[in-house]
Length: 343
Ligand SMILES: NC(=O)c1ccc[n+]([C@@H]2O[C@H](COP(=O)([O-])OP(=O)(O)OC[C@H]3O[C@@H](n4cnc5c(N)ncnc54)[C@H](O)[C@@H]3O)[C@@H](O)[C@H]2O)c1
Image (cartoon, rainbow, N blue to C red; front, side, top):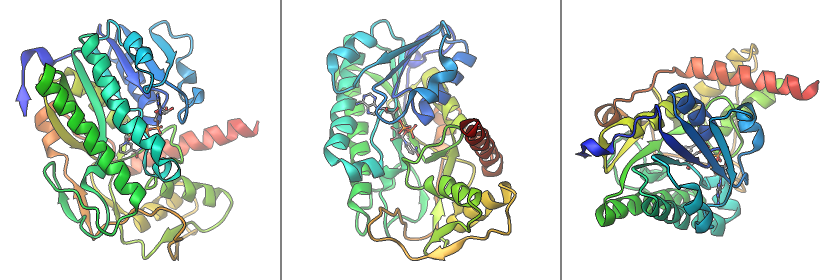
């Protein structure tokens, strides 16, 4: 890990851009930047997955600028990155979208990252925070135990779309390192674990356990768990990640990749039963079902934990929000959104 005095970009008073800012993580990150006193925040997004509802609460805020643009169109990025002090890059295809459209995933997750780096270089953007994923450790039977930053990638026995996603994030990370070596681009890579929180979507395979469970409970049905429910998942609350993105900009650290995971892992059975309990229907216990071979399923080889100790050393970050608290916030947001939609 390298440290330099020049790599710190204080959020307060800076002009910042969040690429893919109309996303789950992006909308929370923009909120956090504004709370920390950013001078101006540009949301750059083509609105292909995330949408205006995610950023509707920011409309009319004089410090927020929306640029509807595509990271595959370099000229749009070059223009949007003018005068930026720091950039957080979030736009990406995840596993389920890779499954539907591999070309789209390859373009956005690889060429798109290089375009972002080129735009940073051309505009002398001081620091880039790149959203990577614990998918860089892979999936399938090889994934177990403590996952630390030098844990190798496991592909055997995992669904192709998950491996395409994980390997595309490895490529994105290497492009950041390459830019640091070639022109001294300062960057921090954050390897998010599965994100959950307000403005939760249906695009992340692991977080489907939360939203589909809540949907089933709303219908008065028992939620479904694939297999025996002993599989580990490790989530992180979206507000904690918004802080991590800001802290990565503000830290003097550069040229580093760290895990940003929640306080502790959980099994799918524990998770689904917790959602039922917090939804006020603890009697709707999970029903164990066989996997559907037509759907992508993310498995591991046993219990694992995504260790986030290095994030504390590198950027001073550690998760603050417990799964119970974060889920309560997510469910309250979903209940309010569903009620509003019904009115
Ligand atoms: N959600 C998770 O569980 C999770 C876990 C680990 C890592 N990550 C990573 O975190 C980041 C954010 O995740 P999220 O769940 O908030 O994402 P999301 O799917 O909500 O948003 C991605 C955003 O990128 C935008 N986008 C896609 N292609 C684009 C393009 N060509 N040009 C401009 N914008 C484009 C979409 O419109 C969307 O707003 C991603 O990089 C993802 O890989 C997410």
